[in-house]
Image (cartoon, rainbow, N blue to C red; front, top):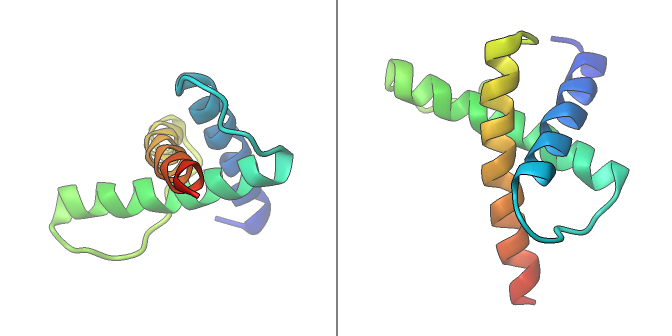
Length: 88
């Protein structure tokens, strides 16, 4: 998947994750994109781990299933990020 597709998928996943999670997570366009891209990798890696049992860094594909996995990973990432930034 190309870098442009990662950016688009990251924006979609990050925006959906911020809408789903309650409260104000802060951050703007760039932080949403980065958290979404990181979330896509987290979701892809967890999906690979649960399906194959191998722990490896993996990205998701640009499909409906890939977007769902990316959004779930982005929700986890945004939640962890909000815990980290709230503690400081």
